[in-house]
Length: 321
Image (tube, rainbow, N blue to C red; front, side):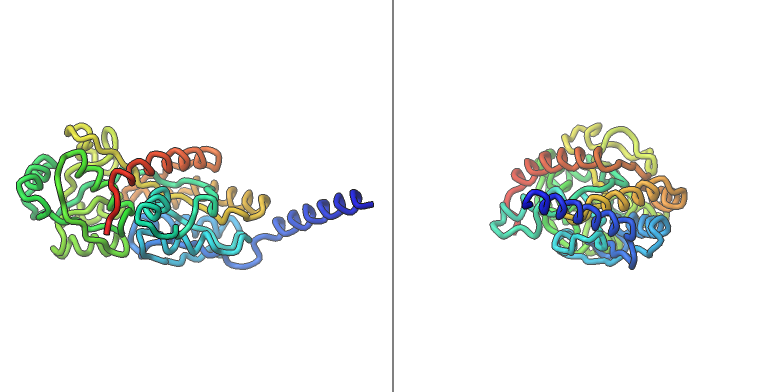
């Protein structure tokens, strides 16, 4: 009798989950973008949200929740109800912040076990941008000046251990230089500060600075990837300039870890449709970040590898006050 009751309970739960998934979604979905408007996560998130909404038959509403290098928004998504109605468009700082919290000695804002990777949309090397009227014409000029004036050159970021902070620290370690870090709440405020002359440089995804490069306000000295960038083919890689500095600022979709599998599959299908959508490719590509889509299995492996690598990078950076 007990065994029959248990089997019946499992069958009922399975049937309920299937019915729920077939009905999902019955109301709007919130996409948390853990940075202010204007940064890479927002540039990617808005067209993806629009395309996913068309596929799902319900609007996907972007909610910008900046702060703590993306940690505040990622923590909100991690703690959201596991019903599929809250999704997250994260950046590469996802792989960094739990280890950074451990080094600082505070409770982690979220854990990797709380969020499940669904799809990657972009994976760009960050670029070193300065104002067009800056004295540095090449990355060699920049590094030589930093060596002559330790701490005099300051750079902005989206927050401690974020996607704009970590690559600059990688460069500093490789080149043997010291710069002054000025954290902001996101990429867009940091770029505004650069344009206004409050800071000297940023490391940012190409999409965040490309329009200002085209308008003649900013100059890009190098990038943290390999070979040539499609959006900036004349910009050299740091590795080609002699610096052992690599970093990719990816963007990807996550859900709370315990979202029912049938719902995950609905969201996964919608993400695939968004990744193949012509308008999404056009909007993100025009911003300087071509779509480099990965479906769930490949993205899960990518994230696991990135977490391992970034853990070692953060340990080298050490505690940041």
